[in-house]
Length: 80
Length: 138
Image 1 (tube, each protein chain N blue to C red):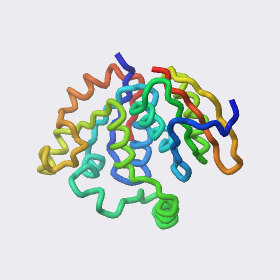
Image 2: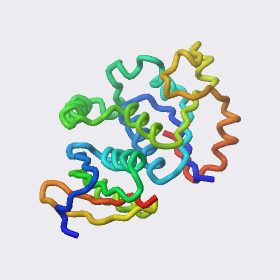
Image 3: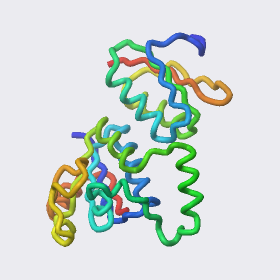
Image 4: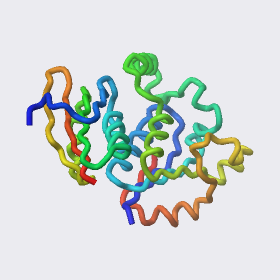
């Protein structure tokens, strides 16, 4: 899957610090539908590690962490 | 039953309160229940309106406070209480006021910010905290 793939939800958390982006993602996953894809944009280095860890623990699918030079685009699919 | 993180929040300065909000968020993110026992200066920081007062900085880092405040303002870092509120919205976070401090300061449930769930004695808190996987005194 290419890193620019369209997702159902886009969260722009650039400028937000740890744990901000992760908390925004958790909220979006909770409010979303099963099967929905969510992209979160973040330039926080803690979140780059925390989000994949959380996604695994929470049982969702990490589609990818894409380096966009000045930020990361992290794409997640809600599985349950 | 979910694992539990227990935080005893004694301090009332920003450098100690920021980690309270952040650690509580981390606990919620990792699926833990979070229980916060606020006492002394920590409890005073949860009095109604306390968050509108200028934040206090620990004496040790007094000289760095203006720089720190400036940086946090520029980068739009949310207040510790807002961070804690978000954690509470997303997970199981209980904020308990220390009954002894509340008595000492003549405060009751109405004196505190809405984030405070209950006023409990130290015995009840310790009884609950004995099951925690992580316990921190801040």
